[in-house]
Length: 181
Ligand SMILES: [Zn+2]
Image 1 (tube, helix red, strand yellow):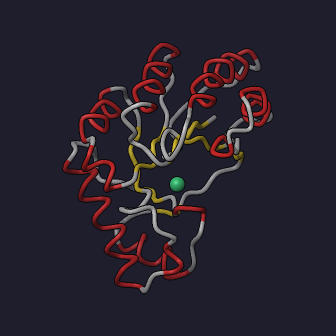
Image 2: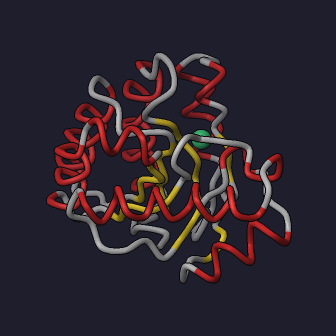
């Protein structure tokens, strides 16, 4: 079972998510946005400190399929540079914003040593569908699934409220947790 969080780091939501993961003893993967890493490098250091994996979600959260190839490379390179400069290991996975990618995006990711990494279960937490809906979507997951959450880009209070219930319920189903990459 792999919990993944996109669009951070965010000064309000990321610390709350990190506190829950620490209390539950769960390691997760954060796909971070480079320009926000530059604003909050301390939060990326806290992710690393907490035993989490920090990976590349582009520099400006651009739709990479709308860019020319050198701009794609720039988005990915700058995000990696921000992540490394905040103290995390060099990313080995890239999750394209909006899940939008093409062969050029894959090629540029590979050139930087990163696999393109999507998800199996979308909780749709970014639509603020209600805590029960997020819990329901996440707890339909089966062993090995990658579950998508967000710790940035909007009000993530529902995600924060849902998270302990999700972890407890999946554990009760006998599932355990590890970073997805
Ligand atoms: Zn995103």
